[in-house]
Length: 367
Ligand code: SF4
Ligand code: SF4
Image (cartoon, rainbow, N blue to C red; front, side, top):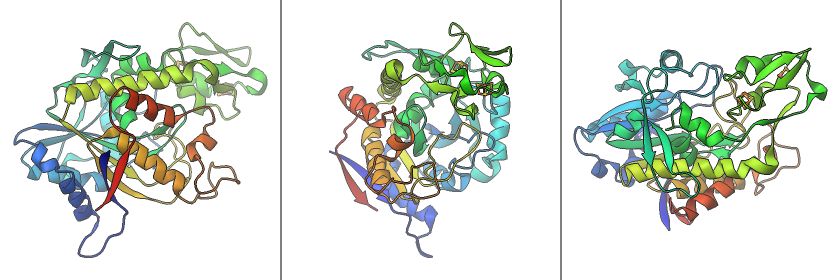
């Protein structure tokens, strides 16, 4: 059974949020894991333009301060995205981070995009997964001396939910590594409602979608399965082809998390912020209303235990309306399952436990 430390967001004048976060990190014994001079990656998601759900710099600053106090040298990092947005290469990515307030002068840590300018700062890593043997990871994630894996816990249109495991898997991979995980996840196209607006064509980086006679046309040969188009279509023409590929995607994704964990061994901790629990991830360029009240901040050395704990807390919480949840949703329901039928975040947890990445059994320790 793994320990998961939990702060329920209660605070006071004597113990405001920054001291609460530092107390959480102290309980985790992060200070004892860090040696002076360790180049420490604080892996976060800077939030796509238009998104408000990402973890604000205010919440990241106490982590940076804690790492610095231990004598280590933190930097804030993420990898470039597969889709065309504001984070597809390092120049735009840096600017987007700055727009969202991740300023080294305020935070005391620089932003370094871990896979470089065009995602070519890449290392091929060998690791024995069930289906994959080679993994394409960001060079600076491989090179860093310690990894603080910080996630915004929320729903995800493909993975069911996004937390510590997904932040390791997709978040530490290069563009090639991301494609490798998505492989085979092309959309199912239903042309009935296609208005020929071209939104999906604009977003499809490999050019797999074109407009033909006022309707969208998919070239599966070019599709890398990045899933960016699913959310761009407002009339539901592009949908996930659940039946065959979703399980394989979840397994590939989990094996990527395994490759990162194997590399970092004990040089890695996980912090999940469970507030502003949006139904989708922080990539689509908007943040929909949260599906439950803010819950708290969790920290653990076990990425499986922390994600399991977050998922259980979200499911137990009262649903919030109006939100993407159906009107009949109640406390105890599988909230992300109701929103994204066909996905299974729980399968990801089950598979990661099978791979030995951590335990689904946990003890929630209130801090
Ligand atoms: S976004 Fe939807 S409606 Fe617009 S072109 Fe693409 S499939 Fe058609
Ligand atoms: S068609 Fe394929 S490559 Fe293009 S955005 Fe959709 S999933 Fe990605």
